[in-house]
Length: 350
Image (cartoon, rainbow, N blue to C red):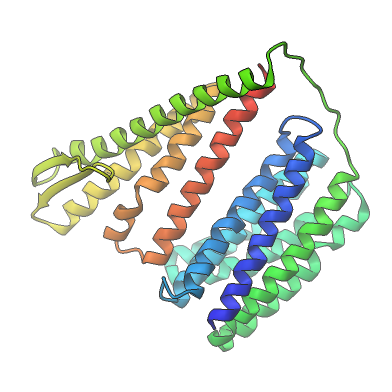
C-alpha cells in the first residue's frame, strides 16, 4: 500500500511541477495574468495533496478511509472551481458554470449524513466533463482532454467502493491520468496567447528586488502577527459569554501564542474554539467584500494564516490528524499564493 501512495505522491508532485513550469514560462513573457491564477490554485492543491500522500506513504499518518475520501473530495472541488474559472476567463461564457447545478442533488444528502461526502467524487468528475463540453471557444481538441482522466477516476471510485485496499493503486492511476491531462491542457492554452503589456522602470533590478522584498517582509509579518492577535482575541472575548474561567493568552519561546481556559461544559469549550477560528474569517469577509484590490490581497493573507493557526483548534474539535494537516498544508499553500499575488501587484505597478 505504501509504495503506491509514494508513487501517487510523485504523480501529484509532477502535476505541480508541470503547472509551475507553465507559469514560470508565461511569467518570462509578461506579468502574472488573471488566466494563470486558477492554474496556480490547481498546482498548490496538488502540492498539498502530494505532501499528504507522502506522509501516508512513510507511515507518519495512519491511513483512514474516511480521511482520504474527504481530502480527495476537497481536491476535486478545488480543481473543478479553478478549471471552470479558467475556462470562463478564456471564453467569457457563463455556460461553463451551468453543470454546478448538479451539486444541488449532492449537497442535501451530504448535509443529512456527512458520510455521504464520497458523493462529491463522481459529481465533481461529472461536472468537470460537462464544463469542457459546454466550452467551445478555444481549440476543439481541448474538449476531449479531461474525458480519459474523468473516466479513469470514476472507474477507480467505483472499484474502490468494492475493495478499499485498491485505493492506493487507483489513486496512482488517477494521478498519472491527471498529469497527462495537465500536459495537453496547458499545451493547448499556449496556442491561445494573450496581449501583453509591459511597463518601464528606471530603477536597477537589485534596487527593485530589495524594495519589494522589504515591503513584503514588513507587510507579511504585520498581517501574520495581526491574524494571531485576532484569532486569540476571538477565544478571549467569547469566554465572556460562556462559563469559562482563568482565560489567558500564553506566550512561550519557540511557539505560537495560545489561549488557556477552564470550561465547565463541553459545549462552551467548543464555542470558545470556534470563536477564535471564526473572528479572523469575519475580518477577512469585511476586507474582501468591502475593500479595494490591495485590501482583498491583505484579506486573502488573513484567510491563509488563519488556516495555519487553526491546526490545534481543529484537532481539539475532533478532526483527524490527516484532515487537520491537510488544512494546515492548504493554509501554507494559500499563504504562498497570497505572497505571489502581492509580488505581482507590486512589480506590475512599480
